[in-house]
Length: 336
Image (tube, rainbow, N blue to C red; front, side, top):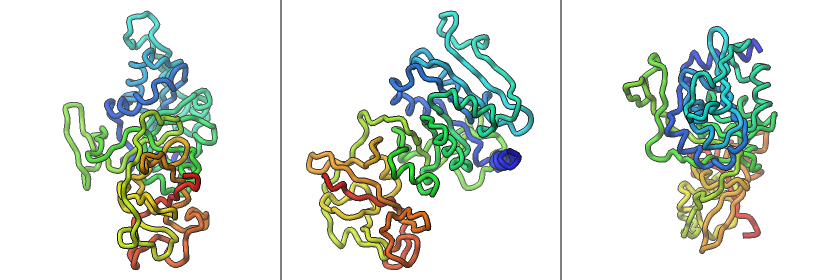
């Protein structure tokens, strides 16, 4: 545990993991899971009780969602962590009062990997939070180990992690419903947060940082009214060049997905917004729901994540010798 604490301590000191989700962004995503939350124990295990809008959202909407119990814990760099437990309105006034919240000091510092936090995890039905991005691999591995449902924020490049990509490929994890396209979200950060190379806003309640390439990941089914890709494009060798070293063609924009191509296609990570909880990408082709399976990614390694489509040479996909930003490899299901 000493090494784990050191890693988390370093992540916090680096400051790049220390930012807090706005209530409005939580509300936009959680509204898609209303029926799922009924009767559930929700655990937010990376939440500073002083700043957490996750606790605020779930406590204020406790009865509306029909929750059974809300638990939050968070890492404290120095000293002991704190657990907050809320089990709903006790006096019928529909107000979350301090007397209704159990506040208890933890034995340790609130590290999500500590034994006492794992005990809370075992009790939970679903975990919802904004975990430290630098520890995302380990964080998700723990959730999968204990078989937990989750809805968490992360950098969308996490799909390229060798530890995480298999969950995406095998239909065990998919993107949430809120897609941060165009204007990316702002997160509240400490006043001493490094200001270089990023966009900030100073507001009445503190400093906010704009964070790029953010998305929700979940394993909670949420396909109702999910967006489906519509494409009318047809394949041509000019518009869809083959990679030098992968048996696949390049499609840099999802709206250009060739409707008549039956081989392997490389698509950008953003194309995963069309990934449904059945583990396939759905597209409307001539009015027919057409599914594409994920077969690999454009990065050869000893884990065979390229799906067997690597032809040799550079590990990264190239076109005319130029490296293409990492792609997800998909193929139309034969039944379509």
